Image (tube, rainbow, N blue to C red; front, side, top):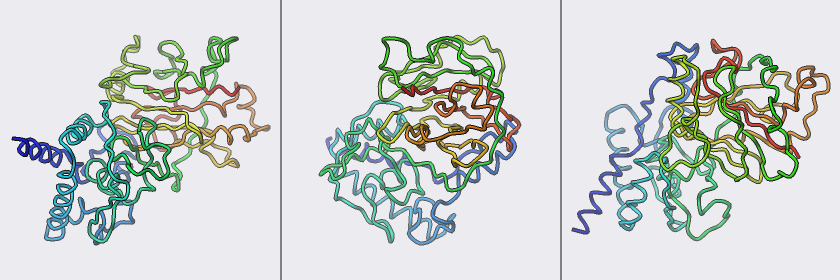
Length: 371
């Protein structure tokens, strides 16, 4: 009976593995310009194309002996790893995989030095399980980042390392700059009450978050004191800023549709090197931040962050060093270098029908406490 339950858990986990890259076309049905190209980019082979020997076994070759052989090898290796786990560890891993990271699940601590060979490559166990259950094209541990909820977070050389694939996120690459956009009019972003500034006697919050639907702010400003904040529409065991509980007067069908797609939303975390944003939803988010730009750039860029990816959205040290004395727009507003704008599902800019973030159905403004 004991072996039967373990075998059932292993089979369920294998059936729950990540698909081989057949993602849906994002925003194509909505008629977004460039949506098909963006979806193709999301499926692009990060190792340089080709799907050569030992590369992305879960997606190698469409049919034929190479694909079948790679699939069989991956299955055999995955089963060998899973069968070494205790029953309670298998149950925790299955809960994490089936909830897609939406449920709070414990760390899966395994020996840090245990690597597994797949084709011509050796993979640390955390990377292998991330390949199986999240990103089939993952190649190296440098492509992922540990979330602060993980016991292995911040530990350089632990004897045991967490292999829960939903305790890691994938790093957003910025080598290929996204298309620039024109700066939007910021009159409607001016603070409407003193909450955006530091109130006397309240020095504990490190940022405040405002939720917008197009040009209308919905709900009150949310003051953030804890190092990590979940912002979501619907999240199992969710604790944080729940957008689904806000009463909105906006009757736009597009706004309602995008609201329902926010799902698990994002995780906003203040870390030693800056503020990170982790996309927990099933759709891309779009981020604009002055510290993501080249300091010499005269236009701010919007960065697209795919599901499961993280990006360092704000750098305090860089923000303090930025000076734009000749920029009239910045001179007329509270220091914009200490704000970040995040749009859910829909992007804006030159490659989209929406030129300004104020046209996006659902978006956030994060205002950092610079004192």
